[in-house]
Amino acid sequence: MDGDTRGLGSRVMAGLGQPPRRLFVVGGGAAALALLVDRGLRLDVPQPPPPVPTRRPAPDESLLLSAVAGLTRLVAAETEVLSGPEAGATVRRLREVSREQLRVLRGRLTNAGVPTTVIDAAAAARPAPVTTSTGATTGTPAPGSSPTSTAPAAADPVRTRDELAALLDAIGPAEWTALASATAATRELLVAAYAARLAGAVLLGHDVAVLDSPSPVRPAIVARTQPLVYAFEVVAAQSTGEQRRSAESTLAALSHLEVAVSGATSTTPAGWALPFPVTSPADARRLATVTLASAVDAGPELVGVNASPASLEDVARWGANVQALAVDWDLPLAAFPGAAS
Image: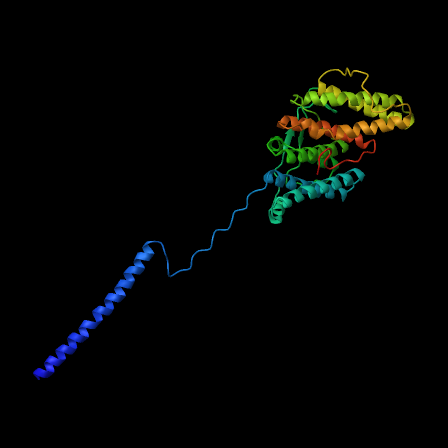
C-alpha cells in the first residue's frame, strides 16, 4: 500500500504541477491584451470609418439660394395671374424674365458645386413677407410722401396685377444689405436682376419711387439722367405724329425723374454732344433707342466697387424707371440689364 501511496502522491504532484504552467501562459496573454486595450488598440471591434468631408459653401450661396426662392415664388405668382382674367403680354413677358433669371441663378449655384437637392429645398421654402418703405419723391404720390408697398403674405395667393406688382416691389432692407456684402460678380448680377424686377412693377402701373435720402451714388445718377432729358428734347423736336407724342410723353417722365433724383427744379444744361446728327424722324428714333439702351445698361457702372445698400437700391430703382420707359421704344425688358449673366 505504501508503494501505491507514493505512486499516487507522485501522480497527484505531477498532475498538480502542470496546470499552473498553463494558467501562467493564459494569464500572461490576458495581461498583454489588457495592456494593448489600455493603449488604445481594440482588437475585438473593427475600426470606425473615416468622417465624411463637410461641403464648403459656395461664394454667396445663402444669398443666391434666397434669390432662387424669391424667383420661384414670382414665377408661380405670374403663372397664377396669367391663368386669370388679368393675363396679358406684359405679365407673360415678366414670367419669361423671371424664368431666365431663375435658370441663370440655379446654374451659378450648380456650377459652384451646390447640390440640386439643396437648391430645390431652398426653392420649396416659403419666404417671409417683406414690407418696404421707400420714402419716395417720384411717381404719383405727392412730393415728400413715403409710399409703403406690402407684398402678399407667403401663404396668400397672387391673382391680380396689383398684387403681382406689390410682390415685384417687395425687396426689403435685409436683401439690399446682404447684396452689399456679396462678391462683385454676384452684386452686379443681382442688382441687375432687381432692377428688371422693379421695372416689371412699373410696367404694371406700380410707382417705384427713388429714395428720398440720396445715396452716395446719387451724383452719378443725376449725371446720367440729364443727358437723357436733353436727348429726348431733340427726339421730340425732330419727330412727327405718333412718334412725337411718344417722345413728349417720355420726355415728361424723364424730366420728372430728373427732378426726383436731383431734388430741384429741372435745369438741364443744353448742348450735350449727340452721338450722331439728328435731322429726321428716323434719326430721332435711333437717338431714342441708343440713349435709352445705354442708360439701361449703366447699372453695374453706377454701382461701382464699394457699394452701400442705399446705393444699390438707388441704382436699381432709377434703372427700373428708365428700363420701363425703354420698353415703350421697343427695347425688350432684359433679365440682367448691363450685367454679364
